[in-house]
Image 1 (cartoon, rainbow, N blue to C red):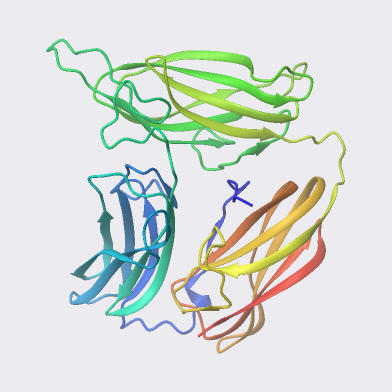
Image 2: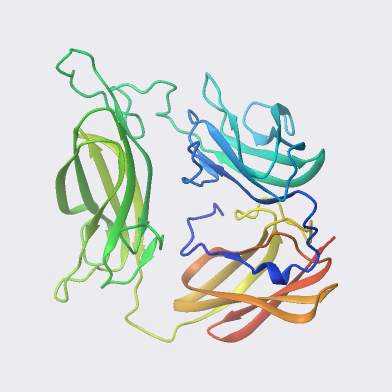
Length: 383
């Protein structure tokens, strides 16, 4: 089953006092992630075929001669061999945030790739990312390209044409995008957060479409909102239901247009919550190096991120909770670390993640609960 966007994505940062094995005289990679931009604030694990891949590495407690290397390789890529090294880069630095990039003058073949991050010649962690196939991706978008391509805008006063594009778009429960989601209740305000890149003012339009909602003809346009953006920025549009006209359960889409050309479309779902007290079960759960569950594991390094992938089946909206414990480690036994909850519905999957500067050696576990009832435990080790 192709992994869907998650209801909630929580990344927990544990207090330094929990990590009793820290050596403050040695370098450590405190965080590492893939992003769409050099600043690193547009985190993602999925890229278009014409995008540059940025790897951001936060290096801590590091002397100035610390070496960090990132090696980019294929994992499962169309028309290319698996585990083929594409490129690698090494930097020598003290503490700070480092940037590694992978770019291509042509389109990246669709598939799964990895970026292996080395600290002083020792593999610290592996970041998997995907490049999705797109019939419209171009190295230099033109006005003739549909959907994801950047529309060509009218010439400026000096006579030269320019382009605009949406580099990111997602659904959320708030205007700042701090609570991203793809599933909402019938009374919720639905926000679409997007980032625009442009060199001149552009006319835009947001269109809300009921793709397949109860009691509504397929692909019914609910509303349109024309507006103008003066410059590159992150912005938002929202749709507010009323008490007399709430969202109807089903599938919806927000279409974002630039100069009357479709630039981005984002899907979301309205849950049927007419019946409360749903029931459900966890069909499987396992640990992984990544949030997509592509690299399952039961053994991590002291500086790794922990991902617990949970597959569920429910009737109605049901709370799912993960409780993290140090089961038997050098620092503690059966010691509670943290817990996180998310509401889920239907058949699908979600993930929970936990991160710290350095984990103590030993055994850990994740206790999983469905509607406050214990369901199962998942064990893993740090070596």
